[in-house]
Image (cartoon, rainbow, N blue to C red; front, side, top):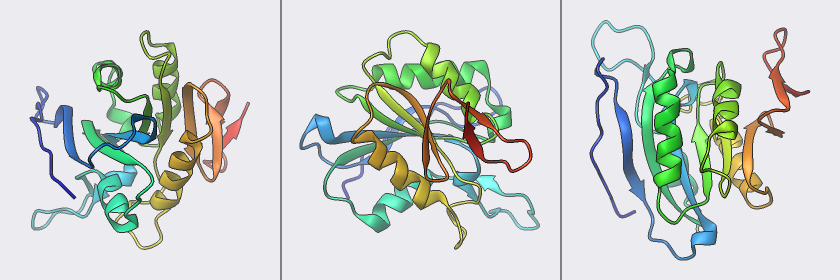
Length: 198
């Protein structure tokens, strides 16, 4: 795939943050173009790179590896990074940066946002309330296990999100566990950890 790279702006704490294209494919038809936006979360967790490390680290966008392996030919795409954080560390500033990344991404109205599951609903509601996104279709997804793991649900959830973009109208949705939920009509079951309709 052709490589297209840009600048990644670090935050005050050194956490990567910004709006950049990690890689993409040449556009054929904007109606079938999807922008994938990384914010971090379990889906992007990787084994520690440093010696004697023990905690997972959030690395490069998992969606890049999933798309590389699947090699889809019916749509073109970009992969952007806004931040690389555990979702419990997502701030108002990060959510505002996500809105701006979506609002300013040229010629695209279909977005898949990869996000940690703990605060995915909060971010979805933030996007739904944001101004300037009424023409966009945005689907948030993630995984319960890192994409690097053999038994990960990452590719499945991404596939559901991509398929949903073909039929959903404008708005903000969640794609998890084989289901699609509207941003303001979903909650997390505290007993099972699953997303359920309200």
